[in-house]
Length: 231
Image (cartoon, rainbow, N blue to C red):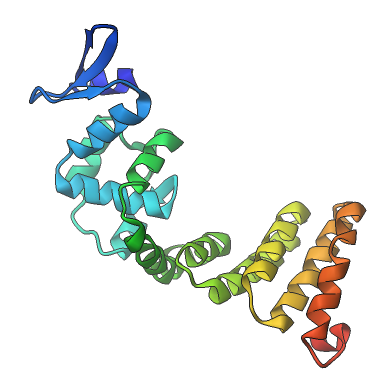
């Protein structure tokens, strides 16, 4: 990260065994990857910081269309400058990614916790227009936005799609998420059956055993029998 900073126009100085990253205005920041990243981001114009914050919420990789769906416009110059400084990397037509997870985490950490849920809910509301098939991503944003019941429904749908390609470990993970997040006993029971089937298909019989108490607890919440619920 120090090398990236130097290429972007910063310089490194050493004082009494301590390294500092020095900006063009003379401001010094103690060494360490996180400190360097924080300093570089803080030194950016507000338009570029706003773009990075929005991108950090979408994910490690994002598209211009996704940012536009969040209300950002006229990003061409900012994107070009961020790419020049290697704070973003172009990976395809209209698609970028963060160069590493630490940068995204640093930027995401700048968003006040009180605002994060609102931002995630906004992303979840707009994603169906730009990435309608990425059900797991939509579910993840709903979960982070505190919309647990909607997230559970999307995780359940994502599990069904993963089952079509035989990704049973992923199916089990999504159904577990759906069961955990939902407060609807019928959806919970449906998720349990899907979770159990996925474990069986993936030959994890020992893990199936731990679902038995969950079946009993969930079935008690429903007046009908478990299989009748799904009929």
